[in-house]
Amino acid sequence: MNWVLRASTGRITISRMSTISLKLPDRLLELLEKESRTRRTTKSSLVREALEKTLCPHAPGGEATCYDLARDLAGSAKGLPRDLATNPKHMEGFGR
Image (cartoon, rainbow, N blue to C red; front, side):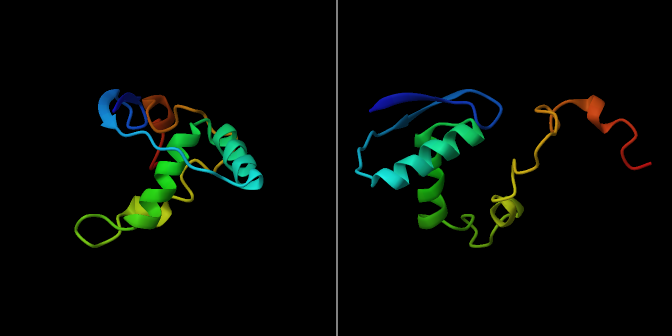
């Protein structure tokens, strides 16, 4: 088993993950590499996300969460500040 540092939740945790290898057609690998650059994430993270989406499409309670329903939209807006969700200054005047 390998130790993997995950920072996708805003905090760093150490979790154990097994390593696998797989064969991909050149075109699929190109798409994976392009998407990983676009989203600034690892190819492994994208493969895990695709597997989770395919094999575990809903929350444990059997109902889709709000994130499940809109996950394809997460991070899709261009030109916004990188800290939009975490920096309180972006909330100034919100709701007025």
